Length: 409
Image (cartoon, rainbow, N blue to C red; front, side):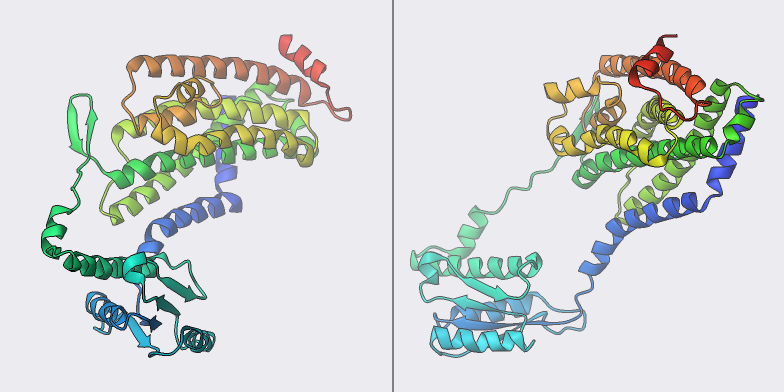
């Protein structure tokens, strides 16, 4: 019962803190921002853009102005792109005029269409912002279409017939899970694993870092001496882990709700029951494993600066799955990814990732979970021994041989 009392106090104390409110509210806002803001911004083309044309062909620029002007318009009906022909000046003089207009803010950029564009298919764009891929892609596609159509006519080929013959194949993706076949959702198949991995990363490491700081604070202000006079160190550590684990569950529930709301806004679903159950199964031992590590670290050191050096090394372990994420998503069955899935500190991350992008055999779940649970149990036992011995030690920092001796005791 004392464990539950400590867990309840830790949960209520932490969940009322400003840090919890800020971290819980800020991260969902970031998720929503990534999901909604780009869409809103993409829809907010409210102003026309003007490009100057230096056209040595005499007709490609006019063709471009006509096709682009008809194809892209703003909500109020105005053309989204306007073009300013610079006449038949010499190239050097025309570029000088265009540069002046660009520097004065009259135009957004200018295109140079050389006289041999029909043979070389080379054109040039100049502007202060060459990172606007949407605009550049549209201009490039239209120029490609104009040049291709001209060359087809030169060869007495029917552009409409060629377009029909070379029309792109529509490749529909279907996902097979066991005997079930469903239409694949490429967008969620890509973002779903990212969502679960980042969710696990934040939930495990935020809660574990809080646990470590909590132990450090109580050691520094000697509150821990009062606590261990009424409960055993193991009871104290267990209560803290349970309390902060409950806080992590509340955070995950909030993050999942926000993530699902963002997915629904996009017209799809992010959370499936099987994925959710798998996440919970691997989250619990994964959190207990890292919480045991961090509570032991907090009991060994007397200052946060010293503890952060070791906890920083622990963070690299959790960042590894994020680094390998692109490779693992493309090769979930590769030997390296399978091996990483059976290394207990990495198991929760890689198994949650793989189960969301591939259908794994049952034995992989059994073996990986068995190894993870066994390793977590041993780690909790060893961390408990370190915590019990080090929690009341002040002054001299324990050496590595001393810590190993405590674990063997």
